[in-house]
Image (cartoon, rainbow, N blue to C red; front, top):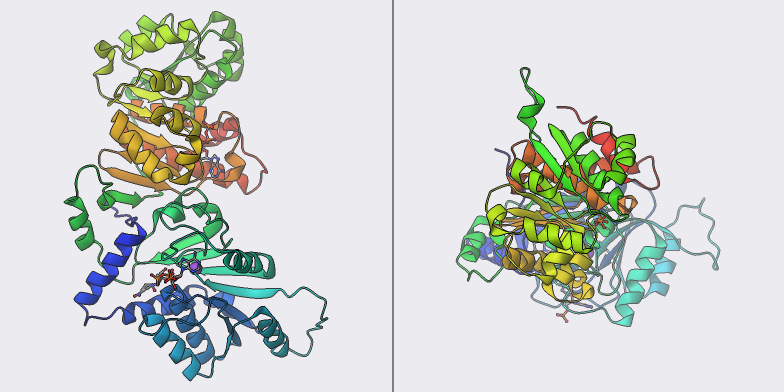
Length: 513
Ligand SMILES: NC(=O)C1=CN([C@@H]2O[C@H](COP(=O)(O)OP(=O)(O)OC[C@H]3O[C@@H](n4cnc5c(N)ncnc54)[C@H](OP(=O)(O)O)[C@@H]3O)[C@@H](O)[C@H]2O)[C@@H](O)CC1
Ligand SMILES: Nc1ncnc2c1ncn2[C@@H]1O[C@H](COP(=O)(O)OP(=O)(O)O)[C@@H](O)[C@H]1O
Ligand SMILES: [K+]
């Protein structure tokens, strides 16, 4: 079975480094050498330029990586400049040794932008026409200002440096974490580097994969540097049950669990999905969820809605069938999608009461609660262990009884709290979707701002239900659908400015077996 990289908090990564050192001669220095070597190797094509490469180095070990990278580039004969706006590394850190090795290679360090500009211009080839008033653009900047050790919001001076990088670099390659991004939450503090690519070390950190992480990391890669994380993870497993278990946080971007279809099959082998809509004017959402379930391969899809919506549904997808009433739907044992287009009427309340009746609520693989069903759940708090719940941040806030800003501030903590409270498989949607479940947490950093369009969540709900109907567990269905949905959206966004839920539905059926 494929194994996927672990995702660890910044603190756990530090513990892993220290444990590695204990069994490797007591020093973390070899890790810095490996990290810098891996970085230079990873971006060797981008670094193969004649113009000077700028390394912006901080005072900690992220800066240390930067100094060692600068040393390697210097050794390879590349023109390189190091800008150290926060000052030099403190003695005793690996970073100080890296700086000394860079200086020993004849490297230069600049403390101010004025000195840096002068040095950059001095290193230009003769063909470069410099005008004192022209804005300097650095073709390649290596961002080694701050990594996983970012400990507090940036001062104004720090903000200015990050803005300087973002507005004066053509391409930015970030070491470990884009500077200014909180490695655990993915929040900018309050600004962060917008990288072309980020090469991270030892393990992915949650903040690279959710919130502002995906957009600011650019192309993300990892080198474990051979550091075993199992040891720290085993320790973490012994933590109290209230503590988030980092042991099974994973970055698994695959959708290889998609069910295969074999020759002698029939639609009855692929399960039934029933989407329950309301009686108001919101049936569009339920129609999108139904279409998504069809296109994701459910054997039959029923829509339970007011007859006035039949014509519109059939015009979209003549394959959709209609269920008579909520009681026949519940009796049918189809996988349910409840919430999109349900509304908040008295009818919706009655539907929710029936659905959450313990008589129906006890079987496995019941389906997906989304949108209005989540608003109902927030009011009538009860555990929904056999369901997948798919809140966006505002719905998550409602379910947790906190503000949306608190959810945004730490999406991972919110997803874990939702799991603790409702016991369901939790899909916290938005940039960098998080799936929290009994066995851990899965991050999906695919997706694109082009997918921030109406109906996108309804589409995802239909897909999850279709995969449960085809035999996947609720957890596998949620992880697979989230990755499939985001990856199809990303592909479409290569040629479209916005991606609609209908586009995703169309594209799903083209996914090869
Ligand atoms: N050692 C190793 O083996 C390996 C280490 N690795 C690398 O080390 C990195 C982690 O290094 P790290 O722990 O030193 O943290 P780092 O990100 O450099 O930041 C700390 C510095 O920033 C400062 N600072 C903090 N907040 C600030 C703010 N808001 N504004 C301004 N300054 C602020 C803080 O100052 P202080 O709080 O002490 O005043 C301190 O000087 C990791 O990301 C990876 O790249 C890898 O190579 C693997 C092997
Ligand atoms: N800004 C974004 N960046 C990356 N992916 C996004 C973004 N907006 C939406 N998506 C993708 O679309 C999914 C559903 O979108 P979302 O807007 O959160 O749902 P809803 O339609 O319920 O509001 C997300 O989980 C994510 O995969
Ligand atoms: K960095």
